[in-house]
Length: 196
Image (cartoon, rainbow, N blue to C red; front, top):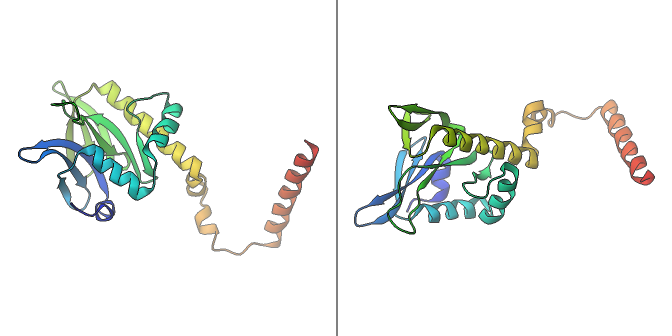
């Protein structure tokens, strides 16, 4: 099996389940750099390995983000700001333990569209994957994934920094005016805390 760190550095675009003769349930990983890689492990195992790499508790994550989007099943996976995956049904299950959902990195999703009674997800690098669910439910799943991504970024403070350009400001020295403004804000907070 390929090293998880190597797959992540190749930028994972999609993770889909498939069945390979003589190997059983397997996983196809589509990356930006190497296109397709096959892992002879179930998609559930591959997702667990990714969660372990990113140090994410899948059960807690699903519970937390499930409450935000009002959904207990089919909850998007948020590993970090660049790896938030939308679950979409890509195959019919053959057996009890078969995975039917593939996971698509929201960063690489162009659109979901319907053509000739089939629904497709279009990814960057001209990659098309047929999905086995209605276009409305697929778009709802994508919207939920974007809500999860936004929530993740707000929770970790990433959105504020990126949207306001603070990252470049960290390398500049603070002026006396900055320090006075900060002191004033701290005193206001202290006063409010003592008052309550």
